[in-house]
Image 1 (cartoon, rainbow, N blue to C red):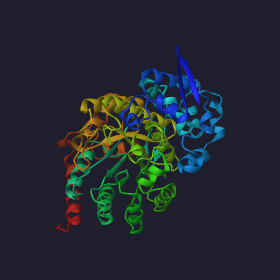
Image 2 (cartoon, rainbow, N blue to C red; image 1 turned 180 degrees about the horizontal axis):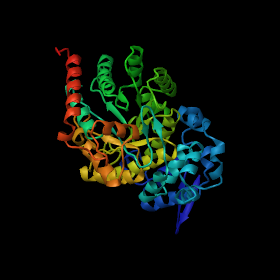
Image 3 (tube, rainbow, N blue to C red; image 1 turned 135 degrees about the horizontal axis):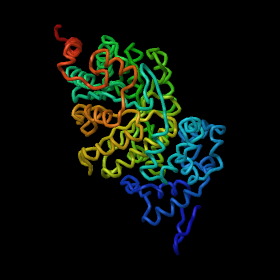
Image 4 (tube, rainbow, N blue to C red; image 1 turned 135 degrees about the vertical axis):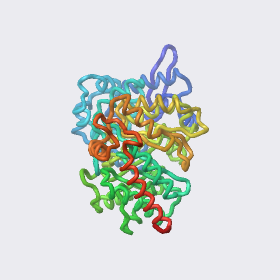
Length: 472
């Protein structure tokens, strides 16, 4: 039991998960689950309790019992007591003050990662304003590598997301070409397939791999199929770079996705066995999103932001190349409007970076949410200042297959130009070698890159015709 008195009123909370839930900023998902604070006064009371809570309490009281959940067991069994040492005597409130101090520099934050649990970082985030989340996340530098280097300070990578409602090779190839000519694609060229066909997945993998090999593009490709399909594609000798899977913060939610931790280990081992990486061995790509455990009725009475941080704890165990919070994708039932989406995006990015993850954010919303592209512009800018590792590049910012709104190739250019950010170094050098970037790092117009763009178009057309069985 936790309690505090504000004025003449006494507020009580039965357990740690109730404190965390009541301390959360307002969001529709927690309200829907019956977990949100019943008033602003109760929210302040919960934050007072949380601020005085010793960090070691999170090692003594699990929000989901150890014996009932393999994610809890992973978090506690992998906790590094030595790394935790510098902050072990702090409360959540004093930890916040330390994170905002000059003492918490990039080196000390990096050394601390393994000593923090997801619940600790979720807890401290609930005491922070948006600017605090930005200031601390900006100090965290998390670098990952496969064929290029992602996450270096002053860099911003972009995923080309060329989804097509029928997996049409011509449409996908055109979207990929568009993204490359606008300097995107260094995070990954990643397709969400419209079909669940393994044969279709292999066709798309071959299309992307031939394009990448023909022009020696220093990036990685991925078809974001279920991990069991990817394992089947690997068995058929498909050119798999990254092993993708959506993950959540509870064992039950992950089982609703058809996965468990052992399957993720099998996927990582299979990805590494192919030896397709060159500059680093981060072969996993994870996507997460606040509200997934609630939608699966697998939240165990834990608020959605704490569960999102626990999903980051799962990701950390597998040394991923990319972790992407698809922040507004699940819908207004979980994040109602632009303000709630913005807060969640900054929380997810902060928590992931503090746990040592290469965090990207799909700044997005569904068409029935109280949000628009102005909200996207604002959130994108905040994340750029916070040092987000990568964002999405969707043609026209409108994903016609998944039916939601995101960020475009031009949005990525805006962020790079406005904040002085650059692509991954290996990819930047490739762009310059083709004349897509000039010596000052500016994208060249179509006339300036006519020859390489024509070559790319010819290759895309040739592979497309082969994929659909047409004569060359």
